Image (tube, rainbow over all chains, first blue to last red):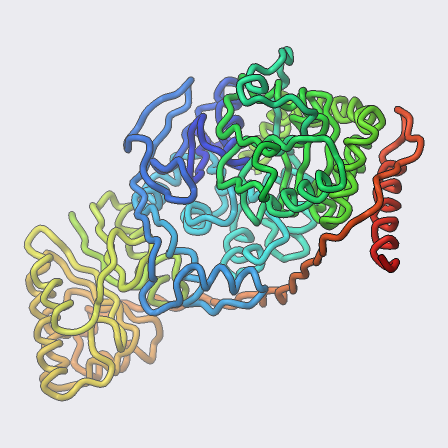
Length: 398
Length: 217
């Protein structure tokens, strides 16, 4: 079996970085390190995925047995020479239009680049027994994977979206040695798009199981007295935040006596007249978040772009039912397997689902316990790390 | 040894980027100190315009007794695509000067037509230490132009065939006008109702709202 450390390559790393794939990479890295694997994290100094501004010092540090190497990030936001700006390229991708080679290069290189990380991978590729890249759509993965070839494991966090259909994505992912998929539909999608590496394992992602759910002090601090819906994550169009706001506003207009509480990053912008019903708690610590999940009448997952949906798992662990966007094959898959989530499609059904939570909270809450059992069976870290270790051993043996 | 490597670079595709990237990897593997300069943003250490006299003067300044030069040359990269006679001589003289100043020099030649026989070609083919070509035809052309056969190294192109990408899918959006609707009535939904029945209740509610909108006020 090859010797040497496992490296995790991710564009952002840190306990205060908001992002599902980043959290999975960080916890997998620390989990494997705690099991005796030698683990490094190769990343940038950025914390914020809007500005990519440096927030951590460059260089090498160690955190709980994991060596963290941060390489300078070259911020390229602006015009790429001879090409439309990135916003126009993003729109073409969102519209399902094909990019030519020059446009794909402009898209890959036009946000940020990390040349020193690339050359570290080239220089040290034989030192690592495996290099895990995540998520799929950033420079760190699209440029880094070819540098290590068969030693690359991609944890793509793939969504059914325009980016996944770019030529460079298919070419790069197929060139990795192995994939770690977080859910069955993600693997199906990779295979249907022709971007699956030659081997792949359904590892899932782990969720920490809180020991208890004490009453949340944050509710009193923010004057939240009504039963509430919760959304945790990035407040972005791509995550379905505007759909949730529209549905919530309509449900309130129809008489639903609920508030909407959100934690995460991105602009909230409550609908006119509902400023006192929409509560932005911003970044909430790992200590405080479980109590919010437990206190919610329901957790809403409005995103169609999910490759795992960790927050759905956290809600189920807390005994809270989930209202899930059925446009996400992954979340639908979890709801159907567990029986613990109500699947809606479109803003009208989400509006009705919110009305249902307000009108029949006990009936909705009664489906949640099956969700906790589902998470405990499939998605605790010990189970997920077992899958990852088996995959690493198979890769190194092969 | 320190190497200055010049050319299109990863993640770009095409022969130029592939050979430049490979040159960097091989020298890094040999333990050399490598700096890569590419004409466009890439994984290179820096990017800058790489065409014409100014770019060639930069090369002349940057190489020296402790710095070797590896450069990809093709029409439009370092050397102007269709130069005037004077321009061709000036550019090749500057490139030749950079090659002479470098501790060691390698040119990866994308098109031997850039170095026809005669004075202009000799300005480059004379001082360079190694010429890399990728076909027998190119090797023969360079030798016919006056390159010393022992300087010309053949590295064949690999097969670059790539499977076609799937066709992109179109996206769709739903519209929801806001109008007065009847109060929600979910009937009797006791605890223990399974998720399918809850979802059916939601769909029934949506239908009820739609029916109310279709009725005249």
